[in-house]
Length: 316
Image (cartoon, rainbow, N blue to C red):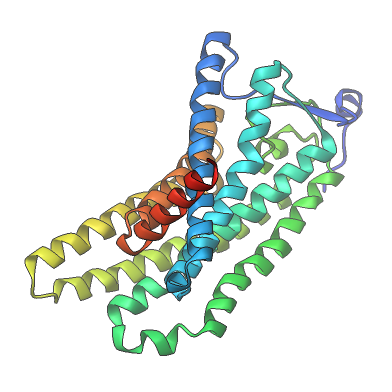
């Protein structure tokens, strides 16, 4: 790693805190952003918690598909909670600072939940098995396999996220981060030191946890579409294609924006584009996932209705 020049040494900060510049520096825009993101976060929190409670309280939903949906809801809730509340506090208090330890902590959990989210979506293999191998579904999707598919991403993500601690050894020539949360890429650009090795590592990890799951999902949906084409009923085909198109739209939104940030050259991904993309995978997709994957499910609507009615009744 290249050493720091005397000039850079004079300009480097003690990195006791960073300044998150946020999405906008205009007061009138920040007020609108606060209201918008508060509403989106509340919707995200309500949707995901209801799904987790409904699946956990109804024994009829204790099957592989709903097991993965509950895990996805939990991860989406944690991913949004790691980012949005701090951003809202910064806007409301007009204080954009974040301490160095808090910045590293936020970055660790962002990578942890982000990687789990990416890998978990790809590992929700029950949709492929249910459509392409329906007769073997119960045998293939055993409790042991479901546990491995859900626990594997957690262990893998924990290990990969710990490697981001290498940024703690970097020196920084400033403390202003052009982002609304602590992310690895803008911090690397803020460093006075040669970060070539770090950037190569980011590309390798991004290829493993973003590009590879995305390719696997596209391959599984290609098989699903071929299976749907063999369905004799035109109405059933249309319904199945509608479901697939909705899921693929959210998948494309999540993986397309993350690929744009972590796998595209920095000359292509400007700070504005990076923040806009980050909003998509940290705020928008955690809010859309429950609606696309769960709330449109007929088997889940009834337990949700019973849960809501029970909560309303008990409150009076």
